[in-house]
Image: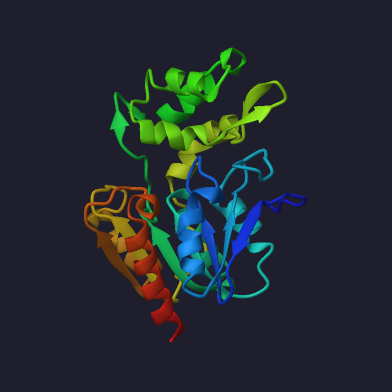
Length: 265
């Protein structure tokens, strides 16, 4: 489905070869700001996007990887290096598989081209729990961000995760509102957990960069990675979890810069 008239929020820093970076579920482009600045300092023009239904970008009636890839492809005038984390990594893979002429090289951060639910507790994945708790929050009773944090803490015990989720909370007049389209994300979460069979194998240089302590990229995904991305190699960063770019920013920038430099040679 071609979606027109959508506003895609972006931020660009640096000068040099173009690198586009895509965030994960319930994230925003600004989550990648530190990594973007580090890579821009290495001589690149780095653009981060708020994906549809996230941040300051437009909301849509449905959400799929094909739709998001099409929206990201819209402003691209030529081939770019493309990097995506988690959900953004799936968007990046779909874009590479369907529009390879736009992708010079591909970096996929802690995700695989397979079904990915995240940790499951009592029959509910972590993504399902996050969305359920956020949607249940009575925003009319929230006087401050601390109030919202206290409410989320009843079920989401990690302060780091709550801080990440609360980046979606913004002032709206005298009250508060979620920037992310929580209803659509919750409804289409099953589709986002999967991976579509689209396009043809992407032959370009590809790096899968995974957290050594994360379970999002397993040995079971090796066959699919090799089938769809025959030039890919996998690098695991020891002692790092799912949020590779924020948990180990210097290692992340070094690994990505080394790969992109080699890809341009």
